[in-house]
Image (cartoon, rainbow, N blue to C red; front, side):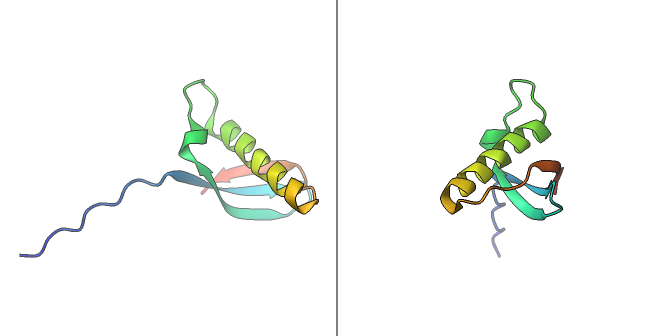
Length: 76
């Protein structure tokens, strides 16, 4: 008799599409579920925006190029 495959664990992150003021779009930006904890009452969109801005700031420090401001975040 064949064994059932074990079910995979739920994803440890959520993905978002991000639109910037200059019209550029980044797809499938991953944010850890740990950073999207809603225990303090913040919405997922607000928490995701903060996490993505932090990621962009870290990338900007390394590359020396700043990203435009975020206009829209959509969960994938």
